[in-house]
Image 1 (tube, rainbow, N blue to C red):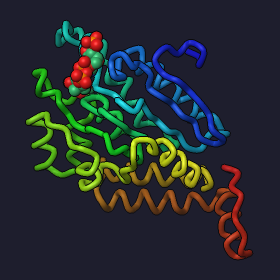
Image 2 (image 1 turned 135 degrees about the vertical axis):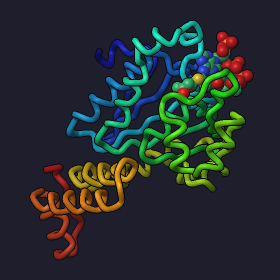
Image 3 (image 1 turned 135 degrees about the horizontal axis):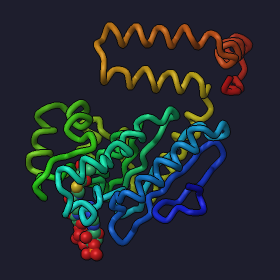
Amino acid sequence: MTEATYKNILVDQDGAIGIVTLNRPKVLNALSHELMDELVAALEIFDRDDKIRVIILTGSERAFAAGADIGEMSDETTISIMQKDRFATWAKVAKIKKPIIAAVSGYALGGGCELMMSCDIIIASESAQIGQPEINIGVIPGAGGTQRLTRVVGKHKAMEMILTGRPMNAQEAFHYGLVVKVVPVELYLDEAKSLAREIAKKSPVALKMAKEAVLKTFDTSISEGLEFERKNFYMLFSSEDQKEGMKAFLEKRQPTFSGR
Ligand code: CAA
């Protein structure tokens, strides 16, 4: 799959920032199989590209994504949906090693909320509506919602959201630590870019190790996590970026990180 063949996403580059925009406006960016295949392909290309240091994932002002494509799913049976195992593709988003910032406006519902939570930092516009409404269509979140949402907002808020299907607004999402900043609609992408530019100046090797260590927290004990972090810390001492970063500090100048 190449950029020229994408039908459901737009791909752009702004310096060291790779930007993927979900683009199925007629169905509020419903996450079809084809869209998810394209998204994963684009993210993996950015992940391999040395010129890209941070990725932004965004949608439109009206919708980040209103969920998995219900039209595609409605006639599935247990066997057919298991055989296709489409959520195995979704899981690849969480395997991307570079930082991904989600710039979210409008609806981030169901799979849209789950996709957003697979990213590393979330910036929201004031219009964001974030939730897991699957209960309203007779199912439950299937791409991480029961696990990732609960770990961020806690058991009781996650239960309320998942059992009622009611979304939270941007301020509530900020209050619960799901999004790091809420800005007026016209600014959410600029805000994400400015954050991405700040992060892009850091050592790519250290960014990768830092992301890996933070994510480790979700599937290990504190003692194993601390050991993992320490090993990553020690490992960075064989990078040129560690030498450059510390030398620059001592020489009272800005570092230039090469990613080696
Ligand atoms: N799948 C397919 N099509 C969708 C969609 C989805 N998830 N969400 C919206 N659309 C389509 C609508 O069918 C509609 O298409 P038509 O114009 O052809 O009728 C178009 O997008 C615009 O939607 P609405 O007319 O409904 O717009 P609205 O402003 O009145 O309502 C909304 C917006 C509240 C988001 C509403 O569209 C909605 O409730 N969407 C479904 C949300 C949902 O249930 N998401 C979870 C999906 S299941 C899932 O994601 C499983 C998982 O864990 C991965």
